[in-house]
Amino acid sequence: MSAVTGFQLAYITMRFVANVDQFDWQVPLISVSILTAIAAWQIIALGLSFRYTELSMLDWIRPTMASYGKIVRYIILVAVGLAIALTFGASFALIEIALIVIYTVCVYYLVLPLIVSSLGKLSVTLPSKKNMLKNK
Image (tube, rainbow, N blue to C red):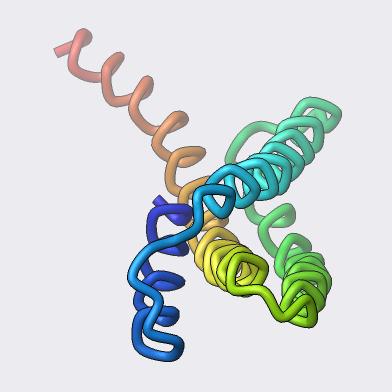
């Protein structure tokens, strides 16, 4: 979802700023590989964090998401800094990749805590509701 949003926002930005009608062929390939690495890194880190704690899902979500907000600031700063560094290549392809990465990272880190907390709470709440319905 965030990758599609990043691609669309980058396309709209390049369309209106530089009058570029389509991405070069290498832009989606490079962008997808960068975004896959970032997404896998974050999801694996969250999974390992949950696995190595002895807390239940609901007890784990609140402190993890609170500390996650502090880490996200630095991750976004590094991702935006690296993406801006790509723009110094004076190539439309590098600028397009930089825009895609910046937009996608911002949307991803906005949506990821919402999805983790809502699905975590849902995974605890739904099984207990199912048992309540069977007992009636």
